[in-house]
Length: 600
Image (tube, rainbow, N blue to C red; front, side):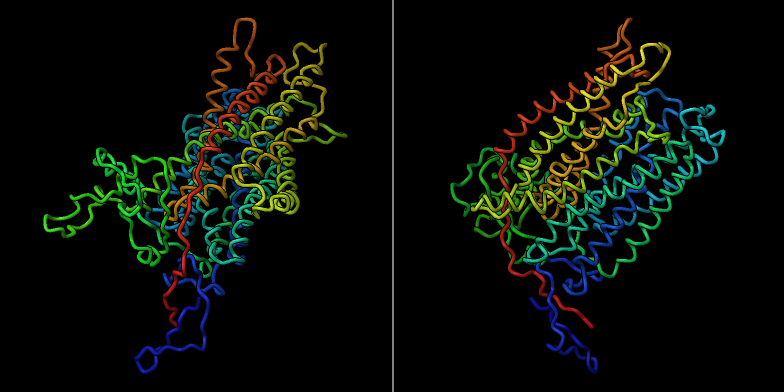
């Protein structure tokens, strides 16, 4: 549709049709709050800026996160199990903060403001960590490699370290779910061409995330492994600063959606209204249910959600009763705690339907989080030299990143078009739910591969060296298959998750949808930490130091990997049941929502 331009002549606004420009159909606005002009805003110019921002921010984040387990063991003096647990808790906290960022974004600040504020916090946390490490922690200089231990630290220095890394957790956690959704906002899903670009954006977003971590996993990981921790942290800080500047540069070109208000109040209004009417019968037709006018929603950039069957108790919140009228039959006004619209009720139904799917993704995140903890510790206990060159264990995750890049190409260019061709009734190819299921299957295979590698690693431990700790003649490159498999599973699981939750959440909860992906990873880290603790308590005895002791040569890490494979298999069975039960959300089609004007 066209936006009507207005020109002021002699103090009077006159219409001119000379510069008609097409506006977006999805209700997005520009930075001034005017309807967004398609040619001037959004699309791939803004999308590419956000992708580069994501890549640099990820480089900064993983410059800290990828070697954090080694920093805790070598610099802070923690053992393997304690360090793995602390990394899992820290990573989990990062993603818990995503709920805070999503709430502020959807309710009050909007996605742009939320991204800018939390990125600033992220930069401050990195500056603090770099200064703390350089001045207090990495002493003597060069310590923290495999040979030189660091001195003990005072309580104040340790406290400064934890304040710094949790500032990083707050900044990155609050920013991450909003930047994904904000990037998707730059593409009009009601426009034929831009809707396809929006689907592609999520794949490129995850690719940018992984390419950003490639540099930190290789170059920064190498220097940090050599004990040059301050350099690695300062490089991360510089990357985060450049990312923030680039994000702010794109301000004039971004498209925005106006925050819809507190989603918690809307949610509980439905619960309270339904409980108040628990004795009321739900009418057989939709005519007896209250719904707002579609035009009223369209003016706010919203859409009506079509009524679905199921959760009939919640439908009672939309039933119109005599209490909504006076004795003369006049409308006395709507009390949102007594009467809710069908769209509002469907928002709550949507959340309840998403929860079982979301819960099934948590165990996958338990598998995924091993890459940042136990995979690194396993690699450190293998032969890490090739032709005299030392391979940092954390840099092996580069194979995961290369796998992600390869499988995104394979999926988008080969697999999805091929499936769509065979499925003549559907042009979508593999659905998001099917992709997530494939991701779980590949994750099971990855854990079996990791357990098998560990089984053979133990067989190659030198028997004539009883005092040797974490040594094996098996090459670290035997870890490549497990990293490649994890990367392949991410393309199906996490990219599928991003698309699924973004597409299946109502218009006022888009950031919440992305936050669900993040909190899945968060709880996966906490469950991993809990699982390690339980396994160590059960497997430790007087003669056995447990499955994951400080010296892996005396443990059975392979059994832990096989346990994860068994648990993920059980999770996959539950996932199949919930995926078949799930009902997709259905929106009413928009008929052009931006009827505003552009002043020039």
